[in-house]
Length: 67
Image 1 (cartoon, rainbow, N blue to C red):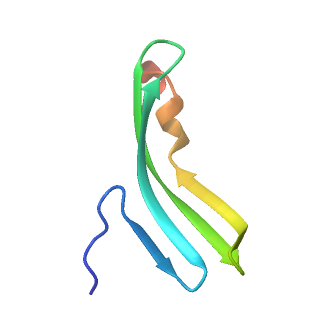
Image 2: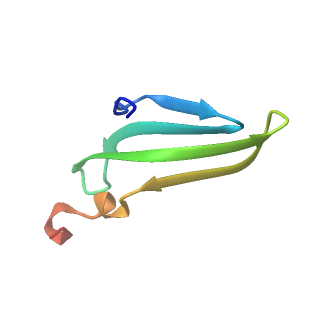
């Protein structure tokens, strides 16, 4: 079994790349925001054909709205 990915790692194979990342910022309410996600890039002949990103959009809710 392969080692577990760490944040910021990437994996490339046969025209695909998987990136794991963390983003930080501030909501319009002033609350800090930190969330992680994964992006998948698919290429053909060196050109991007598809780019997908997955993350939990609940991170963008104000703290009182999260349960």
